Image (cartoon, rainbow, N blue to C red; front, side, top):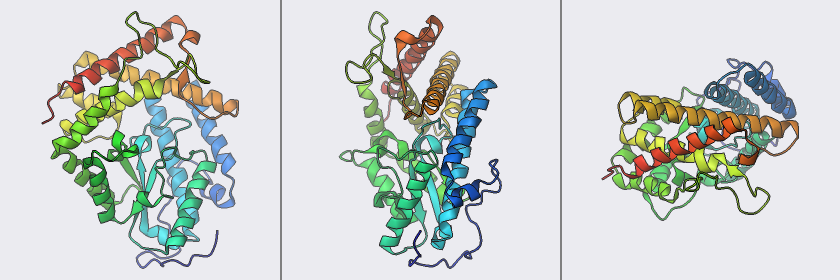
Length: 358
């Protein structure tokens, strides 16, 4: 890392840790990052997941544990960089998407931003954030294909810049990008105690709830949903390419479940950001029937558990993670589970599409 020529912190001292990793459950994590032993972190992550799977832990619990593991990794990477760039201790990491919902699996990529209270030199800022995202990639949090990373200028800024930017993205139908899926509505802070992030989240959700057009835009994204089953119950799989005959369970099932539940949470002011907790809250309030709620939780559990299994298999074979399953290779019980999951999500999508949003 090069010498920092940017703005020095004026609130916290150089030697005071902001991204404290001492409360995590990974001994020596900060030292691993500091020494560049990132491969070891990847190895530890896989070992943890293998232990959870073999002990029969639910996918919901595994997602929560893994998301917290990854949060500790991010904190360690930030603290290590703060030794060279001390102004980072005046910043907060915004973790969007599955990380913000505590729903990460093996292979989940990084979706992050930087909330800043300083204005370091532009070149130094680029150098620092690029180094951070590359370190996270090395530690097993892959670079985001959609570009939702603090290394890009649109994913960092001061509080007012973030608030204006997020609301503009949501309200502008001409804008298209990762934010249009509602990804930016689910985010967590690192460190978790940052009150500004809570304020930003509340401000954003209030904005969405008072702008029916914004919710209608999110609903419109579901209009292209197609049930990945034929009229006769056969799976609709990829027609060509290396995944011919396979079904993307994240894109075809999980994404529609997550997005639909988020829209209902917005409509009915459900505070939780976790999909399973949102489903339970919506069920308790009567917005989703009890039976349908159980079906949705079972669908979420099945798909996520399958993604963990795929992630472990890819890790063992040193292959990039993916979200594809070949229905032809599933036994009769798994085929039944997958079809039940698809039907439960399809029913939810139709419920959201039929809702009154104006």
